[in-house]
Length: 594
Ligand SMILES: [Zn+2]
Image 1: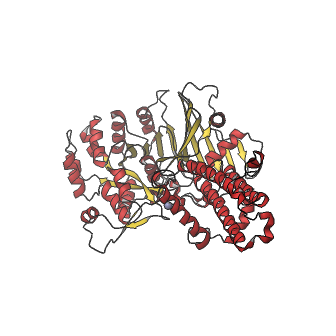
Image 2: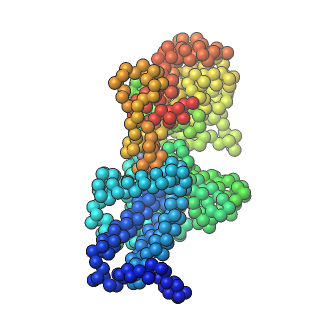
């Protein structure tokens, strides 16, 4: 078709004047002609494979469409050469270049700045990508999991265009090691109502009669779960909705979707979560649950009106498996902290606080600690706002501000029910702090979290709330300061020499630590260089020295000095120890601790 247009207009490109043999004359094509054709086919196969790998790795929603566009162009290019001669190639090549340009622009929106093709350093990135693809196709060194032979690659060409969206793609093999089951998108996917009754069941491959909206919602949720996302955002803009995932604490852009598609998905989600779908001008919230294979997720939905339309945020909480089945072992505590911490939480009375900023994994840590206590032999009650993880054999109570049921009022009534262990979601005011301390002094063990920078700041924060110093002195047992740092991706982390500051800080002898690692970025980690997260901790065990310093006007420096004397490693030291272990990088530790 590329050749027809110039014929119609009576224009013949100058190359046609040169007598290049048409493919129709193939018996006379000659050795050079055949070699050119072979190279051409290889380049086209390469382009299609690269497009397919890229749409897989970046999980673009319209992947089949791209493969179709490039496959179609490449087919047309060959057909054109066959039908009307070699000079059809420049036109087709221009079309292919334009498509490649559009595709590169789209790809660039989904990858980190340092890996973009268009813009500064673009040529270097393109060259690097070509080398990677070359190594994959012919050397087979990278990645080790997919050593496809050239023969397979040709065989794949035919199946490329028939690939269906539901077929598990290559990228499905990567997932966080902690949740391998989440990598099975072809398991049964069930939407559950708030009360646990199944609302919609989607069987793998089964063409159940569900609407496009529900199907899109299913694909987006399954994708978010496969990537280990904790939140899924739908942000309205003037023409489309931006879709973003929070993975390892960082927001990542997924493919944007058109307004009408997003509105359909939002309506479907609102129906499942029992929200009023007609109401778009007032904030609303709702909940539903999902069974994805064997994994259960509770999903909290919050909608807010914005100037461009309704913004929806879904919080995904995995309620089975994961952290709750592995207890404190799973949160990345160093062995030196694990043992004293286990001893502390099994005491008959006292108070254990986890402190950190929002999103530092405080709740997960208190639950992990709580899950180590035998729930059959102890009366365990939790008071939360809202209930996040469901635990067996444990009484869980949600704070309801509308009904004027606060932490403090529930606490008072719970204390009359003979509890052994109490979990208070968060200490925010003096009243709650006081009742918690009194409970800790009267034969109960209290777990709670507090919004504070580190373990010493927790003590000053409680005193700032107006808590009586003598009450705090006798009640508090230990404080765990916490941050979440991203784990280095083991596929691509790069060795580098330890910086002089690190050598000096730990007094490292030459040759003891000859290298640490830094982040790089590969397909497995979506170019970020990180996969999964781990906690960075400082455990302050309250001894008599520290108790003595808890006065109405405590000196932070004295408290810190006493903590260090008592063997507490600060958050930063703990993080840098993990850098030396090779699980995270210096820049990441500094990002979360300063
Ligand atoms: Zn990587």
